Amino acid sequence: MGMGMEMDMGMGTVALLLRLCVLLLIVCTANSSDHQQRFKQAPKFYNSPNCAAPPADTCSSAAVHVAMTLDTTYLRGSTAAILSVLQHSSCPQNILFHFLTAASRSSSSAEASAVLSATFPYLKFQIYPFRDSAVAGLISTSIRSALDCPLNYARNYMATLLPSCVRTVVYLDSDLVLVDDIAKLAATPLRDHVLAAPEYCNANFTAYFTPSFWSNPSLSLTFSGPRRKPCYFNTGVMVIDLQRWRAGDYTTKIQEWMELQKRMRIYELGSLPPFLLVFAGNIAPVDHRWNQHGLGGDNFRGLCRDLHPGPVSLLHWSGKGKPWARLDANRPCPLDALWAPYDLLQTPYALEA
Ligand SMILES: *[C@@H]1O[C@H](CO)[C@@H](O)[C@H](O)[C@H]1NC(C)=O
Image 1 (cartoon, rainbow, N blue to C red):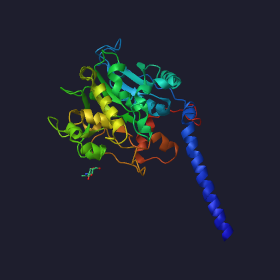
Image 2 (tube, helix red, strand yellow):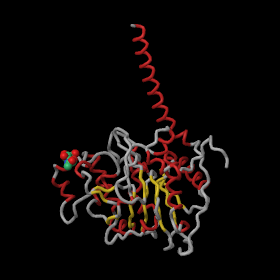
Image 3 (tube, helix red, strand yellow):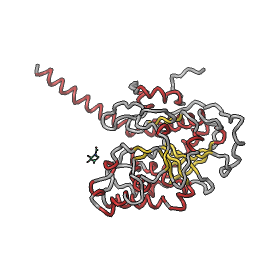
Image 4 (cartoon, rainbow, N blue to C red):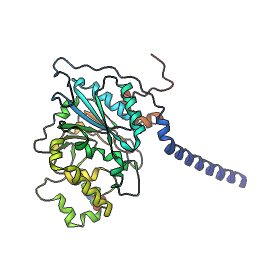
């Protein structure tokens, strides 16, 4: 009996240690294992007859501009997202991609760029090294979660990184796929707004900011006055007028909130709250079909999430779980099956067709 118990305890400890080791291994080898990722080559996609002639250069008015971040860790997600954009576009040759990469990891950027060229030989894209070291000093929290990777803040710097002739850009996260024509999203009427995104007025907006924010009138006044009722929006899918952004210097406005956050905690983790502080209640609406978010599941328990009611143009695996990780682990959520067709990863077991 005693023996058995001791053994159980021993086994338990060993199991725990093993699990810890595995965790450490995952964390520490995440980058090196990504270096071995190989992707299948995507086919060439052609414009339908009624499209404008493909843009001759970045400044051409026929171009539909799409911006995304790019790093080796999320490459599998990025390639799936790009493929989905091209596949559902009626004028795929008119899409120009702008990829923001971390300047501090130039080898990673170079590799990601090489993988992209090999995977999408016909893709029109440019790479913009983002000085992530500059923003790293602005990230306040001691908990350095994935949400606080400096590259997450790159979307705040598009107006300066992208050429000044680029006016409207669609920003997309890497953990999503489109099942509709991105040109429709890009054509969202911004009217006199800088930014358009789907709004969620039922979300508890209060919860994104700390009690010290709400109890300080000079801060909480941000959300009163001529603004509409502020609503949550997700920064993973945005249509942005870069010209108006530049004119209003919104990069500095967002940065100022980040600087304040460094001195006093006014919001919870992430790159999203500063966007809410500057834009919530003052954005152009986009139909919810363009960001069916939260499919990554519950942040705490990892539960699977269902689609929100209504039509779907874009599926977004925001949240803790990513479809590629769950598929690899043989524990997919039902909706991960909708991501799988866009997966270009070449598995070692795949038979050559
Ligand atoms: C919203 O969140 C705040 C802060 O977390 C909380 O105090 C409040 O009760 C919540 N309201 C609702 C309606 O859930």
